[in-house]
Length: 149
Image 1 (cartoon, rainbow, N blue to C red):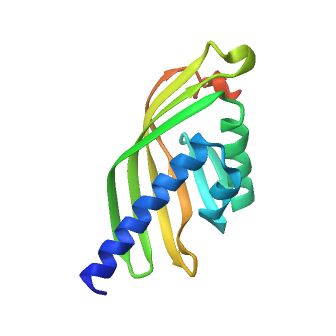
Image 2: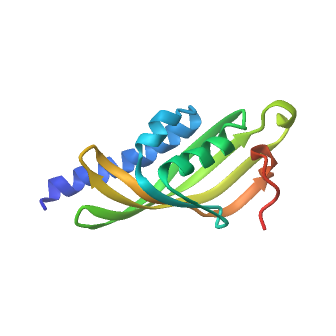
Image 3: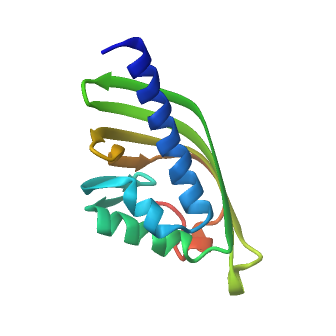
C-alpha cells in the first residue's frame, strides 16, 4: 500500500469520527446508521453491551433523542492498520443539555471512542464502537439513566 493511499485512509477514518459526532449533534439518525456495518457491536460507558447496527442506532437514538442539545468534540486521533481493517480511536469531550422537565440538567463527559473499522465498497465503517468514560460531570439523568454503577 502506498503512503498516499494510507494517508487517504487515515483521513477517511478521521472523517468517519467527525461524521459520527455531527450525526449525534444534529440527531441525523439515517446518517448515523450509514456509519456502521450491519453486525456492529458496541459497549457504552463500560456497562451497556449492544449488538447489531439496528440495536446500536436504537440505543444511541434513545439516549441522545431525550436530550435538548449536544456538542461533541473529538481529538487525539490514532489508527493502526491491518490491511483493510484498523483499530482507531479518538478522545472526546461531550456536553448534553436536558430537555423538558430535565432542561435544568446537564451531563459533560471526557472519554473516548475506541473502535474497529473495516474498508467497505462505500468507504470505512465501524464494526465495533466502544465509548469508555474517563470523567463525568453532571448527571446521566438527562438521558433517562440512573447514575453509573
